[in-house]
Structures are given as C-alpha cells and as structure tokens.
Amino acid sequence: MPPTDIATDFVVLLGEDGSEIGVAPKASVHGSDTALHLAFSCHVYNARGETLVTRRALDKKTWPGVWTNSFCGHPRPAEPVIDAVHRHAEHELGLTLRDLRPALPFFRYRAVDASGIVEHEVCPVYTALVDDEPHLNPSEVVEARWVDPSDLAVSLRATPWAFSPWLVLQAEQMHVFDAARSPEAIR
Image (tube, rainbow, N blue to C red; front, side, top):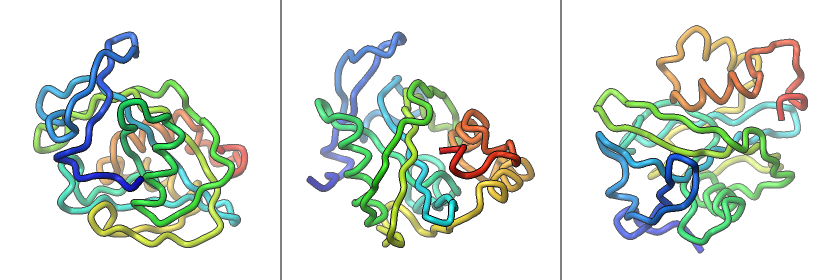
C-alpha cells in the first residue's frame, strides 16, 4: 500500500522506555514539543559500494533541502518496521531493496531544526543493497547522488551543518568516519 497523505497518516507514539503508548496523526507530531515516536532510517548501497545520499524536498516540514541518508520514514500503527522500510523505498525512490539488515537497531535522537521544529525519534537504522537507479518522488526528494562512504565522511566532518543531524550521528555510530573500513564492513 502506498504512503498516504500526511494529513491522514498516523505514527506510533512511544514512552521513554521505547514501549508503544498510542498513535497520533503524523501532521500533529512534529512541532516545537515533538512527542517521542517510532521512525526508521535506511542507507542504501550499490554494487560499487557507494551509498545513496538524498536531498530532502524543499517543502518538507523538518530540514527542508538538507542532504541526508538514502531515506527515512515512519511505520504506521501495527505495521512491521521492515514493511515500512520497503514501502518507503518504493514510494520515495522507486527502489526495490535486497539484503536489508539492521545496522543500529536501537538508534535514538532528538534534534531541533532552524525553524524550531523538533525531531524526537526511536529510529532503527538499516542498510540495504539495490541493483537499480533511483526514480525520485519530488514530494520527498529533490536530488540524489551515489557517493563513496569515505568521501561522505570527509563532507560530514567539514560541513556537518549541511546534513541532517541524524545522518551525522548515524555515520559516526556506523563507523563511516573510519576511512580504513571498506563499504562492506560499514554495512
């Protein structure tokens, strides 16, 4: 099932211990006092070992126009996170994922963008392989590039403000900054 409009979609609310405590309309969740909720991130790799970075659509509520990991999203109530990852890959990038693996299953962060909107998420992070080129959904992504992970690490160190805060934190925890590691070791 394709993603629905943000006005009619729901997210899973979480307690401080990470347990589900309810649901809320997605449109009402992100603000200056964002409730902790469930999300996910995915880093996509190709056969050359490059990772896909994307630039968020300019009309996104949080971090518009900012470069980030391949894609992110929110599982719907009662939807397995893995199913949500596959759903968003198809919707945002027109990609079919293979070899989907957990990379940071307990990743959690809170960040505030320049407009004062807060992201506050328990956000398991996955890696996946793809064989095709992305077909961008312009309501989600305005640009995408395949980059070598070591080049990404250099850019993240030099200009962390140009990237989503979750990408910077995830890259650190996934050891992307360790230039000696191969892309396969990262995933």
